[in-house]
Image (tube, rainbow, N blue to C red; front, side, top):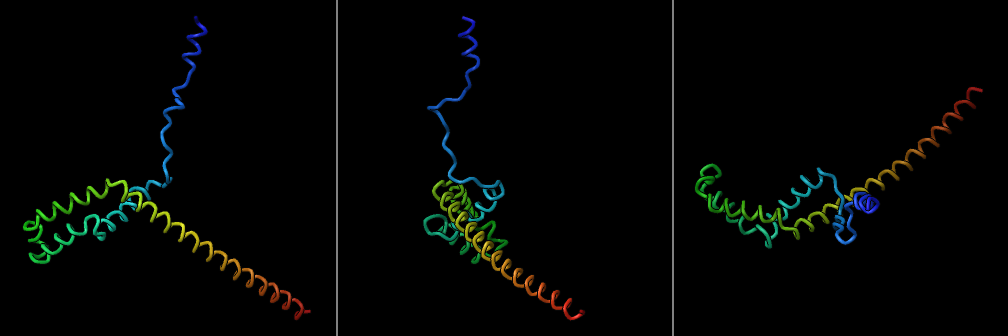
Length: 143
């Protein structure tokens, strides 16, 4: 009986049938919290499928009434735009698109950096070879 109790106590809480899904992309907190949000904000404002109409209505109203007085006179349009943006921030489909776009941009930047590093390495190799020839040539001249 005491052996059965020991085995029950020593069992972990791990359950093979209830494993949480692995996240698609692993990102830094700064990427996830600010950079992705910036992309979501821009995409939501510009894309007609999301908040473009609400943004256009708010912008037109504020242009008509002026920026300062438009804050009070365009509250309905402003609230509609805020609600739409809030919806967009929690729209998983849009967030996934923006994450993929960000990862694609990050890969392109990394590729460009590797290309620049390769070019710089070639330049440094050529300069080092030239410098070696100059140093050797200087020693020969002194002799």
